[in-house]
Every structure is written in structure tokens, then in C-alpha cells.
Image (cartoon, rainbow, N blue to C red; front, side, top):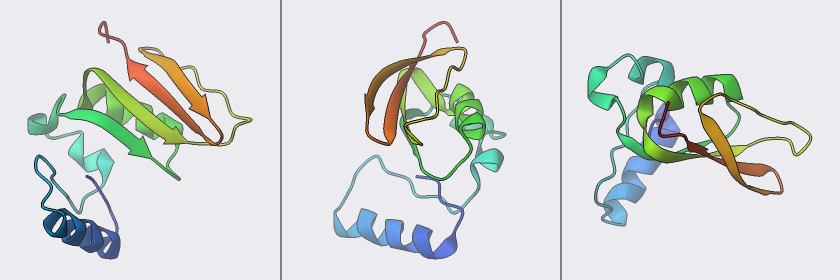
Amino acid sequence: MIESRGKKCSFLKYIELKLELENVIVMNERTTDIIKKPEFLECADVITSRQVSPKIVFAAAKHLLKENGKIIIHRSPKESYDFKGFEKTAERGPAAAFERDSEL
């Protein structure tokens, strides 16, 4: 999990420990910094986003998502997104899910 705000990051780390979650990493960093690090290339199965520009989310997903990984994005139902390399797979209320094409 990537969270740029210290308080939220501390809470997520607490929950990770309390629930004894495995295969979870909580980082107090910005996504724009993480995508520059080669060790995080295609490391994520799922990316969720809220209150972040879809352009930033999809740009990061190109670097972070594994093949056939998914993006779940909170957005206005009136907004429509069509990003090369991603296919919309579901839509419900203010959320939409996208899957990374294997050819990306």
C-alpha cells in the first residue's frame, strides 16, 4: 500500500500488524516516486485509487501492475475513461474496474 500522508500510513501499518496480513507492504511515499524504482516494476495485483487524477493512476499502473492486474478507481459516474492498454471490466456507482491488457 502506498500512502503519502503520514497519519494514514501509520493507521494502515497498525491494521496490517493487528490483522496479521501477509504479503502486504505499507509505504509512506508518493506513487510518482515509487514508479521510478525498478524493484516495484510489475509488483501489484490490484491498484485502488480515490481522489487521485485518473491520468496519474493509469500512468502508475503501467509500471506497477502485473500482467492482467486490475485497477479499481473511485470516480464520478459521469466521467468516462478510455486509456490505452486497459479494458473496463466492471462499473458500479462511483467505482469502475479496469484490467491491464497483456500487450501493454
